[in-house]
Length: 92
Image 1 (cartoon, rainbow, N blue to C red):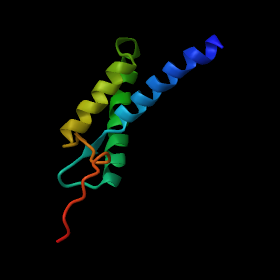
Image 2: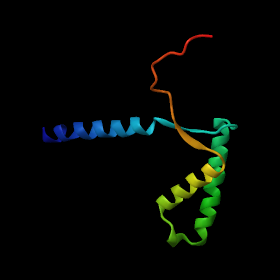
Image 3: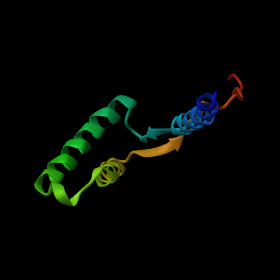
């Protein structure tokens, strides 16, 4: 019985984190979503090549920050997604 009581708050917390993580998406002024994957892959490769030279100096958080910085240099930003907007836009 006690395990069930403790499980509900944990499930609610996980659900809140999931919903919060899905509220932003990558945006670029001139590139498509498909090109995001190519840019992200190139950034991962360049960062991992750099880390390979001195692996003891970097951890996973450093790697993620470096990849995010690389994507920012390529012009990608994160903006709030309108997936949760329920207001319909008027027809033209």
